[in-house]
Amino acid sequence: MTAEILLQTLASGVLIGLIYALVAIGLTMIFGVMDIVNFAHGEFLMLGMYSAFWLFALYALDPLLTLPLTVLMLFAFGMLLYKLVIKRIVAAPMLSQIFTTFGLMILMRGVAQFLWKPDFRSIENSWVAGSVKLAGIQLGKPQLVAGLGAVVITAVIHAFLTRTRLGAALEATAADKEAAQLMGIDSHRMFSLAWGIGAACAGAAGVLLATFFPIFPEVGANFILIAFVVVNLGGFGSVTGAFWAGILVGVIEVMGGLLLGPQYKTAIVLVLFLAVLMFRPQGLMGKA
Amino acid sequence: MNALGERMNALKIGLGLMVAAALLPFATSNPTHLNLAILVLMAAQLGVAWNLLGGYAGQVSLGHAAFYGIGAYASTMLLLNFGLNPWLGMLLGGVIAAGLSFLFGWSCFRLKGHYFAMATIAVAELVQIVFTNWDYAGSAVGLTIPMAQQGLGAMVFAEKAPYYWLALGLLVLTLAATLAVERSHVGYYLRAIKDEPDAARSIGINIARYKQIALSLSAFFTAMGGSLYAQKELYIDPASVLGTGLSIKMALVSILGGVGTLFGPVVGAVVLTVIEELTRVVFGGSGRGTDTIIYAALIVVIAVFYPNGLLGWWRERRAHSQAQRTSRAQEAAR
Image (cartoon, rainbow over the protein chains, first blue to last red):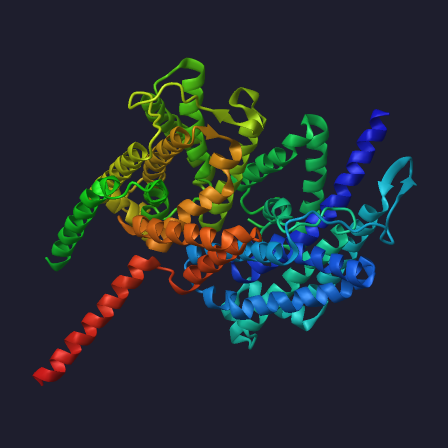
């Protein structure tokens, strides 16, 4: 019995951790390329959720079907946000950078509340509703599909970064902006690409979450702090690090909730976060 | 010489404004106006306190609500459980917060820039979780201060005016402390740490110690602001005194006015609070968050276009027009 509960908890921790990883990948990429922490990253996820919700509610299109469309929209939105706002603060003092993205966070929440009201919404009866029994443990199909989807998208991003010229250019900019610029890589183009990919990843996470998580304007707040923790654990700028750290954080959070009570699950993650920041600021997997 | 004269002028203007401010309750008996003025003063005081660390020492804290909440809870819990006088409670709350700030500093100061800012968010969030689940502190329900005892001794008043003077007094005290820091060697060291940390270390400044001095002072005054809030509202809960929004507002007030300047946060508090209240009154009734949208758009515009704050922008403009005048005068002389 106890072993069963433990296994069940472990499995749900891994599944939610995969979503955390997907949210964190965009955050870590933006930070890696341009040293800006995007406080509004949770809002990309929120927009992804609403996109899935409205396409489902208005046109009866399943979230899995509309995932590519939402990803494209968020990609365009991320790039647009870079062109309109972020571009102006690339060289600004850190204080301006923090408050620009912080302001964007509140702004997007405000606009979402204005357009779609603060109500909690959910997607009922999607393709993935229900649950399956696997090796003696009960798993929700939405969670399972979301976890799988997150793995696939992370793999695609990884392949893009390691196998394509554009991905290599992005990595080069992250490693040394000036040197990359001298090799003819336009930094601004790379920055805007990072914002596009970052927003798209968070949006995809939102769509995958939308089938089992309430949708509301401030939903991003539940994910942004955890995403920071994941980014730190994985090492700022490291996509692979963020993937493994996401899983680790998911498991620790769910296990902590089981052992100490659900009200302390965030506290455990935050303590871990502070401990890592203090004793291993380069992250668990980052280079010294 | 010119700079000194300018400083003296600024101080004279400041003193004049303070005297005028002290007389305000005699000019208006409208409780709404007075309440707005109190909100401005309280926001200004918090901004000035935040500025000690964020402006002078350059350490951007996004977790100052932790100190505010600790101050509010300390004085309230001491009052409710031990009947301690709120005046003493306020002082003790400040001391407790300053003491706990060593823990805050120990855990966060080895981090720089973004990392420091994120760590402070995490610390404040942890404090909020603790108070939300701590039954002795009223957990999520919060604590209520009884109105039975009123008057100066109990720091509970039926009218607004006494709170106004209390807030003004606390603001003046915080400004005086900041001025003292600015004028002392601590102020010079802090500026050195902010602008040239490596150079500061190489000439033997103990960076950790001076950052901690700034943090302790900042925490002390922030906590006193929290105690004042508790005495004014007579009710506190984790959301109202420990929320992330509070931390942001403290920093925002300074940034809007101008970080690292004595009166910057005061200017920022006036502008921000008035805008906040105006949008709330004009658009708040819709219940759709229009006030939030305007507030947020304002944050973005300020952060992107006026990184030096309103005071910095004004000084730049004046310097610019002065330079123009000089060049025109030279032109004429030729």
